[in-house]
Length: 302
Ligand SMILES: NC(=O)c1ccc[n+]([C@@H]2O[C@H](COP(=O)([O-])OP(=O)(O)OC[C@H]3O[C@@H](n4cnc5c(N)ncnc54)[C@H](OP(=O)(O)O)[C@@H]3O)[C@@H](O)[C@H]2O)c1
Image (cartoon, rainbow, N blue to C red):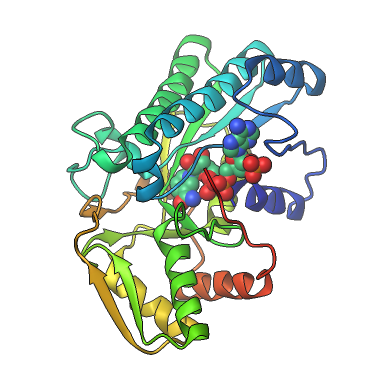
């Protein structure tokens, strides 16, 4: 989802000399393959949009893959970039790197100030290690290796598999299926009370291009909208957009995750970047993409 959005954004801005690969073409967990790819292609700038990504269920069931695949992918990319003298490296982490009970909105400075949310600690520990690797390179070698921490993302090319997806695409699929099958009730995970922030992936892509075109003084920047809503309100909005009418049943036996996760986005705003796509507009755009891609939307299996 993120890689293709960044590719679209770069192409729209007129960048042409882009190199990208699927995991089948280049398994980033394989150090030798990554190093020889770098020696052949000699990139000037590297944007790491590759990761083992998933929601609470996937993180819970596959802790080893979420820790180790992410460590291998990012370590190989960062190390090869340093060896090949790549001048700019953009590392994408996630808001789950911040402690579960950190003061809200989450500031970059609260990193490593408390315990992580246990449902995704494996992923978070890998991501924190990537932030620190980029910070170490900046400190030791003076290179502009920067970490961007996006909030929850959604948009075209999201993962719509109900076992591994994030909350927003899972809700789109559940309400859509219920509408098609004439089901009046839709069961959703948790209590509906946690608060979350959502950013359209095209906004993130714009932030990545913005960051690529500037020299950064610091190593870590939050990327979000700075606005959140309850999961219950999100469900009602998606139900309305999809056109399903019926009852939502909240399954409180399932985990809620962190009670609130709102980014402080003032650091990036001071540099001149803010999100542009409203939540309702973004969900409408994503649902339309889902409808247009019924034969080939992504379902990530682990
Ligand atoms: N989705 C979110 O809500 C969210 C929020 C915050 C941050 N992020 C960050 O954004 C980045 C991208 O996430 P996404 O949502 O775009 O995930 P995604 O749609 O699942 O894409 C992940 C990408 O990683 C590639 N990949 C996975 N394993 C690989 C491997 N071993 N070798 C090479 N490529 C591999 C996949 O390639 P193939 O498809 O070819 O297998 C895919 O292109 C991640 O760093 C993630 O932490 C995402």
